[in-house]
Image 1 (cartoon, rainbow, N blue to C red):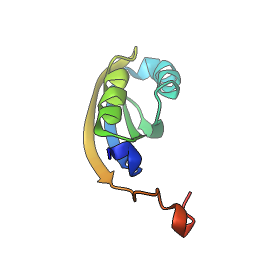
Image 2 (cartoon, helix red, strand yellow):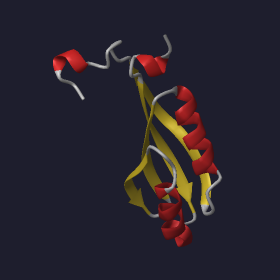
Image 3 (spheres, rainbow, N blue to C red):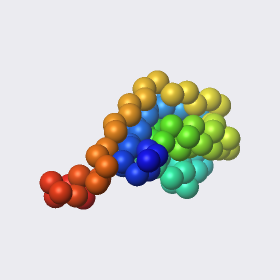
Image 4 (cartoon, rainbow, N blue to C red):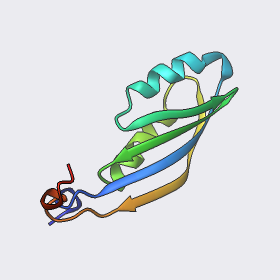
Length: 95
């Protein structure tokens, strides 16, 4: 039984440094990264959260963000993992 069978959830927050003149391009690029959501942006800095089913999903999203045009750097500042239940919580009515 792997993590996908028990509904594992990984959540990370990233600090993204970007070229302020390309903020719109970075915003558009983030929209194409699965699980990524822009939370706060101010000048050259942005906080992005990423959710995925595995640490690999988080790492893949981080790499994609680092490679976006206009991004100078992106680093993970927080990572949390929650293990689900073998039935995904269905018996308790959890979707």
